[in-house]
Length: 235
Image 1 (cartoon, rainbow, N blue to C red):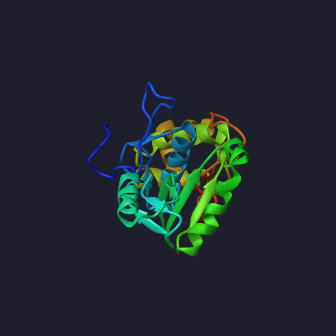
Image 2: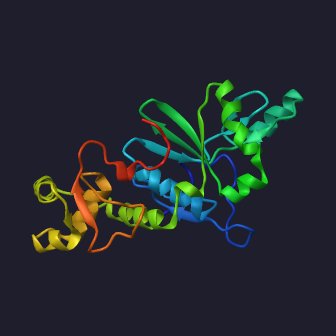
Image 3: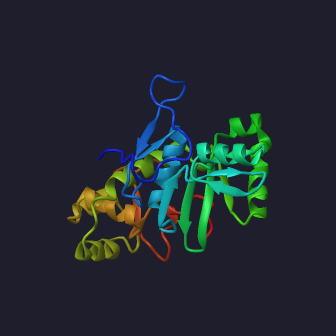
C-alpha cells in the first residue's frame, strides 16, 4: 500500500527522514488509507481509533484553526494567506486527528504527558474550540501503554482477515464461558480467525495487562466490545 498524496492532504507538513522528526506510516483499519504521521504515539492512536467500532472514519491533521476567530482552513498556508489579506494576527492550531463518531465529529490531540507538562497551554484548547462549536479531546500516553499498543497493532494487522459467519458463530459458542487460544486451536479454530474475531469485536480479551499469547483467555462478546473502546471518545 502506498501513500495517496492526492487524497486527504494534511493541514500542516509532516516531518520526514533527515529532519528532527521522522515520519511514521500506518494504515488504521477503519480508514483503508495509509497515513503519514509525526510520531509513534500518533500512529498508535490512529491504529486504536481504526479498530474502535465507534469510529466510522479518521483523518490526520484535517484542518488548521485560527483560535482567535474559530475559523477552520484546509491548511496552514490558507490560514496565513487569509490573515495577511485581512490584516489579522492568527492563533494557529492544527489538531492531530478528526474522528467521525455517531454523535458527530470530534477533533483529537495526541501528546506525551511530559510535553503537556512543559506546555500546559494545550489544556485550554478544548474550552476554546467548544466556544466555536467544536469538540476537542486530548489523549496522552497514559491511554496508550506499551502492552495495549502492541496488542492493538497485532489486531490491526489481523483485521484484514474478515471472519466468516459459520466460523464466528462456532467461536462465540466455544468462548461463551471462556477459553484460552490454545484450547480454541485444539478445537479446530485457526489462530488467524481468532485474532480476526478479536479485531472485529466478535470475541473479547484483556488487552491492557498482558500481551496476547496462546494462554490468553478469550470470551464471547456480550454487548459492545470494550477491548476496542479504551480511548475516552464517548458514545
